Each structure stands twice: as structure tokens, then as C-alpha cells.
Length: 432
Image (cartoon, rainbow, N blue to C red; front, side):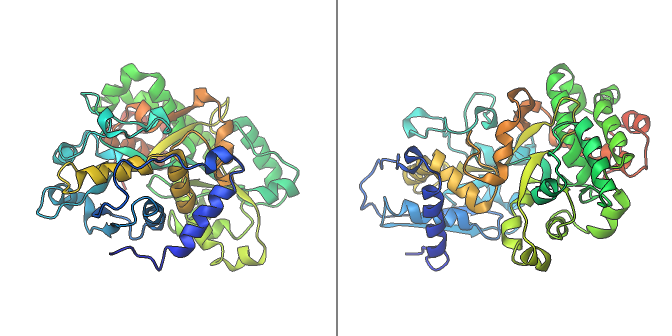
């Protein structure tokens, strides 16, 4: 049986340590009760675009404790987004596959969603109540066909040692950010805030003000259709975020030119520059933060002088920052699976507070369950007030509108457009 055991022994030990480190017997307790005979023989294939998926493979090993005669494998599929729909109905269809919320509303993926098992069917017994309700996407008919496995967000990595050394508190709103940055600059930090000046989700401008824009959009739901349809006047909804961005880039908080010169991409370079140890705050997404653990040993500066760091929301608002929980990856069950009962059984096993948190912990992404205590890196998210915590689903924004906002902030942040010009050009702003 194909189990990829060699790479999983150490990972299984990590999972055990994660459970033991929770400090709660309730979190350690096994809650999964198998539906079928433990000697049932079956095989399942999960497909996705990740080049490796150690955290999922660790869950395979845990699943074997209940079904020792099972054989599970993860397969990376090239050109995933273009081939997955046809793969679901071929002669050897995958049993479980990855999906993303940005696929919703895109006609290209209609056939894909037609192939999804309805995991909300009560007969399947998949209890997803442990997942934050705002992250659950459903079809127009109310069926749930994909469940979040990993989530991400927009914010900043903070060097906690610098703040302790300078006797400063991590800022929680824009006013505090400006004051803290003045003190940091006076203390010799050339650019208290840094990030990747890229046209991308992890780009520094997007990490700073996209949550603010998304919050404003959510509070103006009557204007969302116009925004999604690129009606010219709807661009006015971007004004508060664009004006805050302009205020930010012209403050003592950031030296954009320094960011351009020293950070060449929005992932590896962001992490490695942060690990140099002289950047108080580095804008990043949770997806970027997930890569920190593997790179600590690769950074000579960090290895020589390690420091404590945590992830916080960006303090863009006057009253505080915004935690927009963005679904990073979902799983769906293929209703054409030749082992449909067991595919649903694995999902029933996986969709559990412990399993989801273990997976997120190993991948160092944000868990979709409503408990951030499993990972100290993201523990600050627990402190964001509920009225400023929401999911991407709740905004109603479709991907084309999100990309137009990204084009607007990239143009304004780099001085290529004024705020008024970007608002007037909404729907026609060139994407980089």
C-alpha cells in the first residue's frame, strides 16, 4: 500500500507534540468514531496544486489508526486550475480535490462545482460546526460543497524584541502607528514598516488597506453589485482606503524606495529581509508567514541572533485594524469517486477542531476553527473586536473588483495616480 511513510514519521511526532502542548484534555481527546469496519480495504486519492503537502500526509497517518487497511495518497496535478474539471469525470477520478473561493462565480468552474458532493447532507455526518460560520460558502440552493482547510489574512510580522528593546507597544490603530513609527525612526530604524512593493495579495499596499476597503464594502452592501460590475461611480467606495494609503506612504512609517531596493519578491525575500532583525514591522499575509519556520535556519542573521515575532493585523483604521479571514484552501469531495463512502468518511475525520488545527499548525497557516490558541504566532487575532473581524465571503466582492482595487492602490502607492484619478478610472485601471 502506498503510504509515503518515510517522510511522515517525524511529522506524526510533531502532531503528537502539538496535541500535548495544548494544555487541555478536551483538545487531546479523540472524538472521531469510525462508521465502518476497521478492516475495510480501500484507497483514496487527493489532488491539488501544492508541490508538497506534508500536513495532509500527516493526517493520512492519523487516519490509518482507525482504518489500517486504507491506502491514501496526495498527487500534485500540473496546470491544476485548467485540468481539474475534466479530471473529476475521467476514467480514474480523484476522490477529494482542492478548491478555492475565488472559483465561485467563475463560469469556467461550473462543471467543477457540478461534480462536488454536497457535504452538508446530514446523512454524511460531516460536522463542520467547529469552523467559523462566516467561512462556510454555499450554493444558491444552500448546499455546502467545499469546506475550508486553511485560511489566511492580511497583516504584518512584528519583531517583538525590537518593541521590547524600545519600550514600545505594538500599534493597534493608525494614530498609534504614526506615533510609534516616529519614535522608531528617531531610534535609528530607517523604515519602521517594510513590505514587498508588488501588485499582489501579499503586496505591502494590499496588506495595509485591503482589509479596510473590504470592511467599507461590507458595510455598504447596497453598492457591491455596482462595484462588481465596474460601474464608474462605484469607485468612490475606494476613497477612504486610498486616502489612508496616501497618508501612510507620505508619513515617516515607510520608505517605499527602500522596500523596492531590498525586497525583490513578495514571499521569500520578505521573510529573509525580516529575519535580518532590523525591521520592526513587515507587511505580509498569513501565506507568507507560513514560510517563516522553514526559513529560520536558512537565515544566517536569524540563526546568529534569533528573535521573537508574531503576526498582527495592520493598524490602518482610526479605531483599529481589521481581521479579514480569507480562505486559503478548501477541500471538496468528488461525487464521481469510486470510493465515495470512504471519501466522505475521511472528510468526516478531517473536519474536526483538532485535525484542522494540527494541519494548520504544521503548515503554519491560520486555522479555520474559532480558536487561535493552537499557534502563538497568530494568537493576537483573538484580540481583534468581533465587529472588525469578518471573512472574505461576507464582503460580497468578486475577484475582478478585488483586482481593480489592487490596481488602484498600486498606482496611488507608487505615485502614478492621484486618489481622484484612481477613483475616476475604476474599472479601467491597468493591472501590472
